[in-house]
Structure formats: structure tokens, C-alpha cells
Length: 219
Image (cartoon, rainbow, N blue to C red; front, side, top):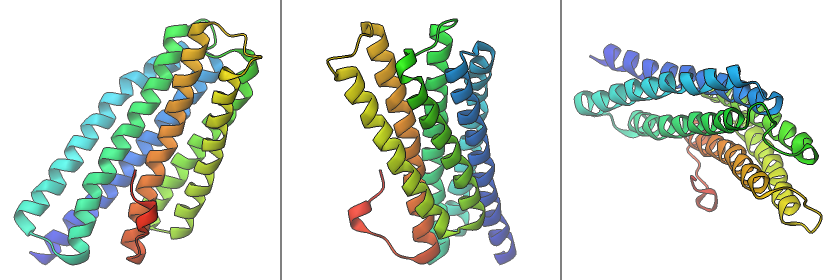
């Protein structure tokens, strides 16, 4: 029975890595669709979100089955409960990718944001993709240094998010109302994507070290 239990725990952890990989692919395609006004790629991201949702449900069902049948305790219990919370965050990250892709589809053949903001969004997208790739590796290895790197990259996304708001609220902003709305939403989606990654990173760090900072609680 113990061998079965350990195998099920490995399946949960492997499932998280696979799910994170799907999310990383999703944000990479979504940011390309957004920055390049690629409607075909946007449609691909939107369609693939169903797979992320299905993988999340399957993973959650496995975790719940383990809780019901194995009644884990101590670290094993923390792993299973954390997996449920991590899968929820990964699913939300997939949703953020989809929202970014939807903006690209809605505004096609035009670009989503005015020319003055495109370098900012290109950098936000690059950072989100980098964060997502590091998150996959973090879930695979539990290397706490990667958790710190994700937090640092998130700080950069937050700074860019503030730059977008300063721009659209500034006196020199010449965009139409729709440009303001699109830029605000797109910036928020990029920022929330990174925030969810930080939330996951903190949970993995806690599992790896047993240390939890109450001032940096989960998002």
C-alpha cells in the first residue's frame, strides 16, 4: 500500500509539471499573438485552454482520491493539499493567457495597444514567458533559488504594470477610450499571470524548506 501511495504522489507532482508546461506554452503563444496580431495563434491559445482545464480537473480528482483513500499526514498531506491549490493557480494562469489571446483576436487585424506602449508589453510578455518556464523547472526540481528568481522577475512585471497605468492616465495620453481599456486590461492580465506564479513559488518553497513568511502570504 505504501508503494502505491508513493506512486500516486509522484503522479500528482508529475501532473503539476505537465500542467505548468501547458501553461508556459500557452503564455508564449498568447504573447506572440498579442504583440504580432496573429489571430491564428490567438485562436490556438483559446482552443487549448480546454486541455488545461481538463488536466486540472484530472489532477484534482487524483489528489482528492488520495486524500479519501490514503489519509496522508505531515509532509505527504501538505503535498496533496498544496497540489490542489497549485493546480487552481495554474488554471488561472491559463485563463490569463486566454484573455490576452482574446484581446488579440478582438482587435485583429489591428494591434491591441498603441505604438507607444508596444515595447512595454513586449517586455511584460517576455518576462511572463520566462517566469512560466522557470516555474516548470521549479515544480520539477523544488530548487528554491528558482522561487526567488520568479519573485524578482515578478517585481519587474509589477513595475511595467505601473508604467502602463502612468501612461494611460497621463496628460500626454492620446489614445481613444477603447485603447485605454485594452491597455489596462492587457496589463492587468500580464501582471496577474506573474502574481499567480509567485503564489505557486511560495508554496513550493514552503514544501521544500518548511519555512513560511506570514508577511508574504499566498495571493
